[in-house]
Image 1 (cartoon, rainbow, N blue to C red):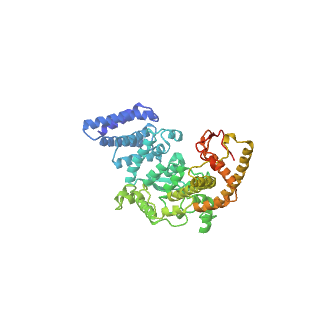
Image 2 (spheres, rainbow, N blue to C red):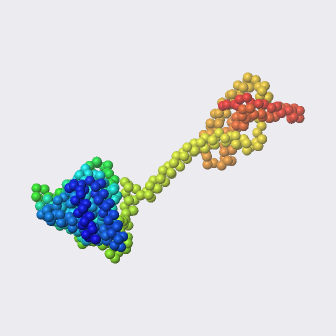
Image 3 (tube, rainbow, N blue to C red):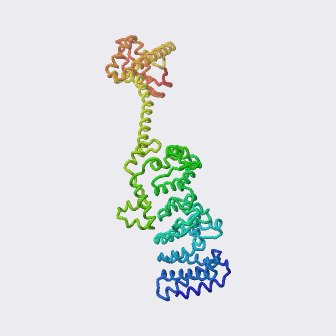
Length: 520
């Protein structure tokens, strides 16, 4: 079966030009032919497709090495190197589970390029962005497929603790760096984690950290945390949500934020001065609680410190994230160490309740109750004057109604035939009634707590100063105003002035219709 794939690679590459595999569509055509051969060999040899794909990948690696050795251990690049990316896509399509084969393929790619940017750039910026950054297009359809493929290769590389020699310009020496921390050549030789921070991609940052990316990248750059803090302070107090999420995820992996400004002109700076300088530059982030003060000035919880230490040990041994499942811990703590879940402290809610800037639900509900209470008091203020205003105006009529169940209007003559002098008397009587009513109103307002009997006594005392004729005329006007409406018919028995006429006029009950009600 190895011979079949060697013949396929030789015949295919001999028919195309040197840059014939530079185009993505050309690579897909070759990949389709290779997949057809893998499927046919699997059916003919009665083998699993994953095993046949593994053989095809190893054949591609051998073909590349033969061409490289024939050129004096120098890669010819072009189609002879792009055959490795066809094998890379074959691993992903058929799900090769042999980590040793995948690592051999990755090492062969790194030996020629000294970077893995064609694996990371598609996940960071999408399938088309690498064309403008590095001059090539990703072999995967979209950014989601790029991300899943990146996780696939991260899984196999970390399972074997894959480390490669990398030249660090800052230290002017070559150091052994893990696969996940290899700098990206097209991005200023920055590590994938630093590029994810610059791209404000919290989801990719979480994936990289879970699979063992160093929170302090060994690419020779500045501190990743301080670089992110500088990015947050660019727009004042207008913080981008993605940047805040990246900071929260990054702070889960470091025990403390190391203060900068260690020395000036090769002279060390004392801690108090460094602390003041840090607050002058990033004080707004502390005030707005973007960064916890315990992680800068104080001491973090023992739970957080233990998580950082456990992750450092597992990262050093190349056991992230699979090694977390081997720990004899509850599932919730395993997820906490794996950065998939946060465990809040017991004093978290108490701290939030004491904070006025970040109120909790209880504080919000308390404010809501105060507002509701204020509305009730205000409505009471509106209703109270109305009640006090209604009492004095209706008290006289109510008292009259209680003392005389059947109110009778007493007049000397029918209203329809009253003379002008009587109208003048009624007007004067109405004026006196309004004065008397206002006095009664003031008295009734000040004695709202008195009983009904006390109110009647006070009214009787005030009415004694008025003559009987004026009282009768006042009762006449009040009853007519309170009970007679426009167009109503009122039966008013007219009492006689002499005892002899009582029997004669009992049957005579004149009816008077008021065209307009009286007004005071």
